[in-house]
Image 1 (cartoon, rainbow, N blue to C red):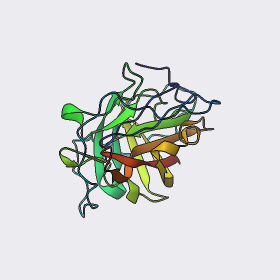
Image 2 (image 1 turned 90 degrees about the vertical axis):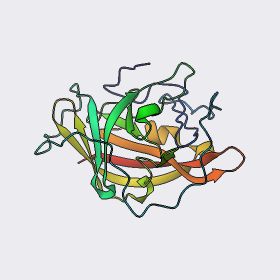
Image 3 (image 1 turned 180 degrees about the horizontal axis):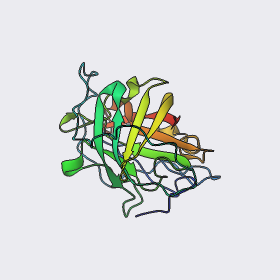
Length: 227
């Protein structure tokens, strides 16, 4: 389900992000209180307890080559190209981006099948480089082991995130905060609310695995601004 995402906040009233065996991130409308997290109607296989951080960087997933130099900062009001690749030098991560939206049941689609270990841009958020918080999601782990955002919690303020786009340009973001929130107290409007300029949110699961549900208890959120 596509949305007009050139400006503003995520427009879905009750999207749920399911990452690394299950999550509950409600995406609210600006100015409204977030809805309680939904219980997904289907769940993936329960993950094994969260693995210890790997001493090596996550496996690359065939990212597109970067342009020789980043493009100038785009106009916040201009139509932005579709994102194609996310690169995180501090983690050694490079992933082709797939585009995902909402499922029929109102939950946010997540990478699966052949794309399970790739990152995904959520098309209910602005395109990277447009005004507002662009959202890129990825699993912390899958049935294959550590996934694309397994090391996301290791990022630090000042780290850079580059997003390559369909027209050959690149937008670069600088990390401002790395936070962990319980899924049952996720600050929807803080994470997804309108911003004055282009920003980026990287989101995955975190915390411990709840043995009663097989799902992670928290979400890791990296917030970055346009460099």
